[in-house]
Length: 49
Image 1 (cartoon, rainbow, N blue to C red):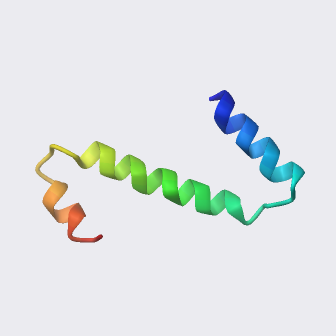
Image 2 (image 1 turned 45 degrees about the vertical axis):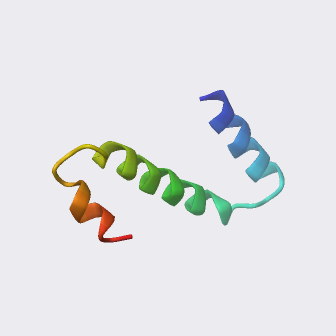
C-alpha cells in the first residue's frame, strides 16, 4: 500500500490529476482479469477484449 500512497503523492505534487482515473481503470481491468481466470465466466470476459 505504500507504493500506491507514494504514487498518489507524486501525481498530486506534479498536478497530474487526470492520471488518477486512468490508474483506477487499469487496476479494475487487471483485477477483473485476475479474478476471472480459471472460472466459468472467463470465456465471456475474454470476448470483451
